[in-house]
Amino acid sequence: MRPKVLVTGGTGYIGSHTILDLLENGCDAVCVDSCINSDTSCLKAIKELTGTEIPFYKADLCDLKATEQVFRDHPDIAGIIHFAALKAVGESVEKPLLYFRNNLESLINILDLSLRYGVKAFIFSSSCTVYGDVTHSPVDENTPWQEAASPYGRTKQIGEQIITDTLRHTDMKSILLRYFNPAGAHPSGKMGESPINPPQNLVPVITETAIGKRKSMTVFGTDYPTRDGSCIRDYIHVCDLAHAHTLALKYIFEGRQDEQTGIFNLGIGNGLTVLEIIEAFQRVTGVSLSYILGDRRPGDVMAIYSDHTKAGRLLGWEPKMTIDDIVSTAWTWEKNRSAAGKS
Image 1 (cartoon, rainbow, N blue to C red):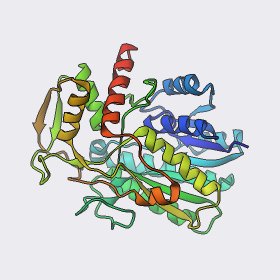
Image 2 (spheres, one colour):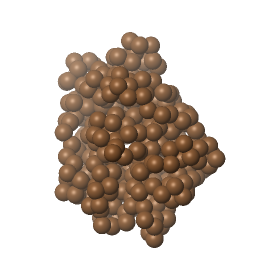
Image 3 (cartoon, rainbow, N blue to C red):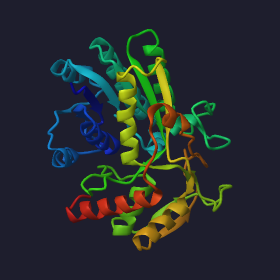
């Protein structure tokens, strides 16, 4: 019997790719999203790729009553993957209360309903931002947290603590997946990052600049003590990241997780600077980018990349895609969505 999984924020970038991976690996999915920063076009792509039309609910998880309707309609939900959250670091610095209210209230509501309806597994979309401005990399799951560099990062720190405290004496088990920097698109070219609001993540900013949607892009900070003065990040292909969620669910479903709450880093494990990513894009695609060198951006961490040994050992997960795969699939997606008239 295929377990049913509720994916919150399922029309978003990582959520939609994870739904696809779940369907391809023996699970059924239900999707809920407020669509404040995404649309439902990805569900059409999922149907084209899998032949499956999944149930979709447009709802704000901060609305407990609307969210509970999903559980009433699907009382057999076995697992939840919780992506739904605001995620722009810069915006969180400008609007901290918006981020605290949205990201934490929605988490509390979905946890409340999960316990009431007997959900077995809860996977949380966390982030490497929980580590703060670390003093060294790579970081592993035991690296001590530093002060959060942004209100967004703080919501992930608090969110992890809420889950740990809430589930400590319950029958539901959870896994906190700390992502590094998701990027790239599905190799089919039918799915990728397509936010309604202007993206702030590096790779979609690069592809939008390359295709002419932006006149130029800015490299924020060139005076960091790194190889070339720009920030260092660990970029992971979105399909590799999506598959980790499926493996995390199966780890709980199969009874292999002994602890109440497990924690795993997910990244390639190799840090690249912003300027190195730009160079990789230009080399792989043959397209020259127009960019300017700017000041540091509030909330940015200088350098962070992962040690994902634990995920490999316990979940059987290893990233398969390289930075060349990331920029090439992202560029194919950008060209396809632009040809289709998507902003």
